[in-house]
Image (cartoon, rainbow, N blue to C red; front, side, top):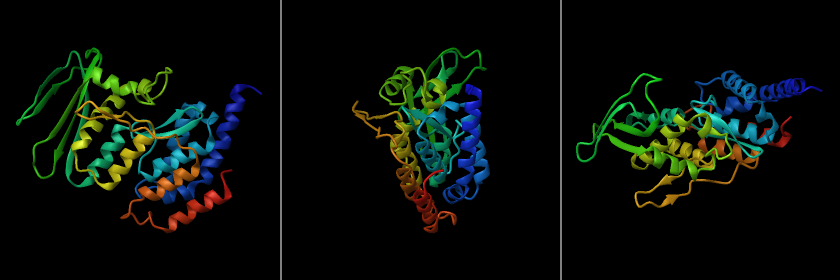
Amino acid sequence: MSVTTRTGNQLTQFRSELMAMTPEFANALPSHIKPEKFQRVVMTIVQLQPDLLSCDRRSLFGACIKCAADGLVPDGREAALVKFGDKIQYMPMFTGIQKRVRNSGEITSIQAHVIYENDEFTWAQGVDASVCHKPKFPGERGKPIGAYAIAKFKDGSDPQIEVMDVSAIDRVRKVSRSGGSGGSGPWVQWWDEMARKTVFRRLSKWLPLDAEADVLMRRDDEAGAPTVEEPSGMVLDGQAEPLDSFEAASHGVRESRVENDPKHDPNSEAALDGLLERGLP
């Protein structure tokens, strides 16, 4: 059997398994994301990265369920499906974290951008802290030299600003399990996104985050996300053991369920438990 035929058969089987999980996705997802849309995104990603099919299938479905429960889609912008050995974990990206942080009710806007050597960038610290960034057009910006994040608050208090140079970002990357030392991974595929998320995670220590955003940060930790450096220089290890079972993922769904969404009620636990009892196809 040719490699193309074998991959095609794997995709067909995976599509069937993914469609069989429609009730579980419907229970996990917030009402504004339809299971069909989520499943289309997953299929697209798997078609673009067929090596995901060679990994532990239960961990792949577990990652999808966790992503759905957090109200994100694994499209590489809001979240990503990342390989760790033969396991798959879902990793929130900056756009997905930004989306959830805005729901806290106390933050009006979150920005994070990469600074390039040919950009105009001015940063002032102190009582009147400020950032002025005038980027060049793509192709004229040169190499990245750093990143910054800004949060503005609804009560009108001064914005919170965090700036990191590229060497500080690289130190975080090196201690991350997703650092791409093997020549692959999110730091290789989406360096800009990971740099933005890294500087935001440092900023997030000073932000009033709600429970949902806090759960999302823990998801990031579970996926071996960049660790957070304290001002003292001490590194807080945010890494956790890889997801070992689909049961662990379903437990995470229950933890992160949105209470105000009628789809996220105790009855949905029965559907997840039923899936675990009968097993994946």
